[in-house]
Image 1 (cartoon, rainbow, N blue to C red):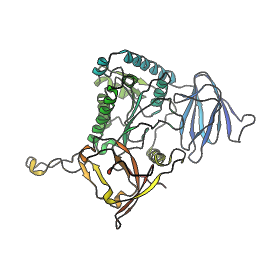
Image 2: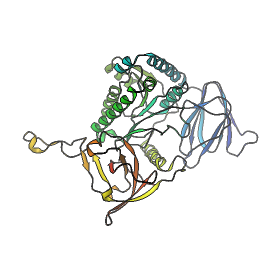
Image 3: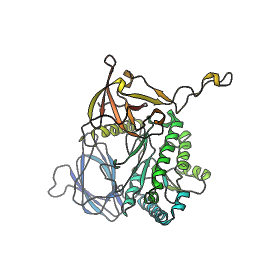
Image 4: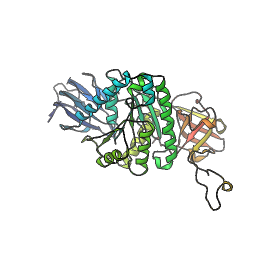
Length: 428
């Protein structure tokens, strides 16, 4: 076990020092009301697969969870209040063994002919199913060390590791992931679902997953290196009923050939019973993983949205704009009958169309809504188009027919077509 003590010449009364032994881990959760600084004093250590630079202080925001792991031993200093403990038993060896297997697949995929790669993504695409995105970050960061550039795909609409919740997204990862800033956002490919649970519109969720997969497949066709590097796919934590159906749909749609199941023996057995020709691997989850209750998830979603507009450290300045109702065309996907009653058998009731584009009249109900700005040029392209970004509605003036919104930057929006769901936010 590690010991903690205030080092000689400490920079503040809250500075503590930890001596970590071989293959041990310091698990940390920052307080809700304060930041935390951390640095590596000696030895080597990493956070979710990314090596810590020696002697450099890293500043973590409030309500942030992470773990510092060392393979050979390290001395760590922390400055600030936090909840933490040291664990000597971790599943890291099994995780790095998975990484080694994936590295072998990448190498074989790089050596395959273009024809072989087009016929199957077996050696170039793999999916991972678990409750936390921590393992995703490890596998991505470890892959980047030998100069691979894997693609991270996030299908978890409830939290959002790449962008705000309510979206499915993908982004290339070219460098080990920053322990503080997280997943890079230089080239994200984002599709707006608009809700934080797939049960609101299951068919739309499937459609968007398919659109994302097809778009990535087109990109890989002209980039053999990215295809060989493969994908790391983070799916949802919901694995019963519809959630299980959507998991199978994602595995099939992305043609994943390795499925990692973290700490769920029943799920692993079920997948092995229905999926043929793929590797289904059960892994132990970290002892630091704790269930997230509804309140925690809501706070995390709110924090992700705030981060989008204001930055992780409140270092961004979003721009407030006023526009006329006529400047926008706002739509919601799903609703309305699939066919008129006259076209249905006698006595049959029309069912809601999950992919129908429904125009929305701008009214007070849009206040505090998060709207997606579509790249579509015509209305018939909206469902199949990804989005440029998001705006936050701060005021709706019915009398003047004006809408006030917050955007990440100034200037005209890339499109007049906006998408609404059930995603809302309050700055307070």
